[in-house]
Image (cartoon, rainbow over all chains, first blue to last red; front, side):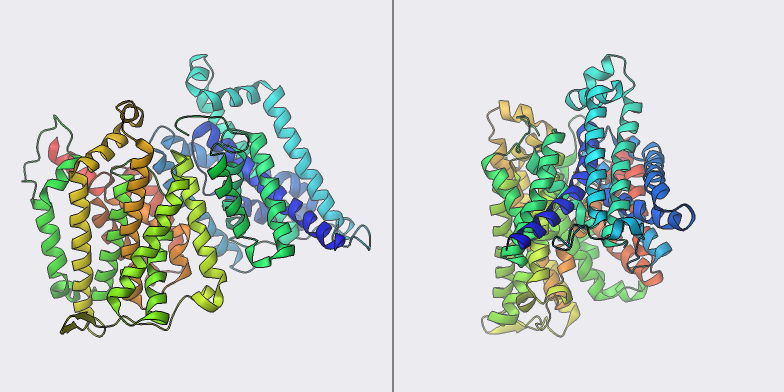
Length: 289
Length: 330
């Protein structure tokens, strides 16, 4: 029984860490630019596919470094060409725009790489189980968790200790004042968008090694990411982090007791949070959010 | 319905040169005569019924999006619940089409009303996020509950039954044209109700909330309650459309509950002209016909639909009726 619980907690932490990477990216873009990026899951899939192309030539390690950067570069181009133009319009337009982009990217993935799953090869050194009792803790899973922890810590340090990061946090609170202080808000938003997309690309490479690639792989992570943001509290990245881990572990533990409810439980958590604490676990109280 | 179109005319703008009733008159003539000329232009009656059904759900969303200024991205859920409520009733409970439609409307409408109490706790883009997330619950239920809902394959094994009016019956089962007129009849009733609501003090209050939520609140309007009511009303109309959708296809499909359909409903509203009473009808007609055409031409229809989304946002944000109106007034 203990092993079963441990097994599911491990699974929950792993799936939760994907939720966290997704949700942090979505939340960064949402907090600063008020854009819900529906295409975030598709950028995640692109990260996986880019790595898939690169691995035969460069090996896994370089792909892990470069593929997310390529996705971020693509995100930069898309932001410059399209997303930037709708920042100052009714939010319904940015929603529809990213919705359309998500259709296009998904369809292109299907066109180029086919509708079926593809495996992403990880190095042999990572694929062994670490101990026979805890067969579910493979080297790759430990490695994945390490990368997620390092990138999350890196992101929070960046937001706290660098000039750019402080500006992003300030912009989240009051963009007009930040602009009035002479900071190039346009550049700030573009950079912030690219960072968010980078996180999606990184999650895509890591997830590809664990569950394989398919054109819809990001879609199943998108809604949990939304829920993580709502549960954690709007405007708070720490809250998003907690929210992602919470719903990941909760849905994995539900699998032990009642497998059919594993999808439902995260919605129940969201409903409870909205009922008891509408602003989310760590959200700020605001009249119009 | 001529008066309803005036709701979007701002004070101080010059009146269009054509009288206000021109557009509704044209729309009703086209809708009522569609079966006569549809075959000549390569259409078919089921496609026309599909257009009217989607127009109804798009107008239902516009009640919320265009006239209350609140963005729901989860209307597919209530649309789909209407479809499942109707389908499940016909399959397991009764062979009365009226009863089935009533159950469909109640299922979607009541679900929307109850969830609305939670959804309306957030505003702006977060309202949209919560509507999407809650909408997906029903998708998962329909998808997982194989034995009852048919799961991934959808709910089959029912068909619409002839309508009974006391001693008379109307055979909407075998006759596609009669069914089309039934759909148009239900559409007309719903549109009349929506127009009536929007002209009432209640509707004016909703528009005040759309224009300036903060000011409306300072005027003592119970903003939360009104948004919730508007959401509930919108869900009832959306599930009515869903009920008709199940009857049209004799089939209820879990993908009709998915959030991608919600996105399609929103694009219909925006493409036709958000804030314009008849805009969603125009948007739905274009979208449904285009989708029908493109998906028969190429496998990669998703790219084209996605491109359509992008084009509308980038180049036609006011929608078709919005552009026509601007041209007429300047």
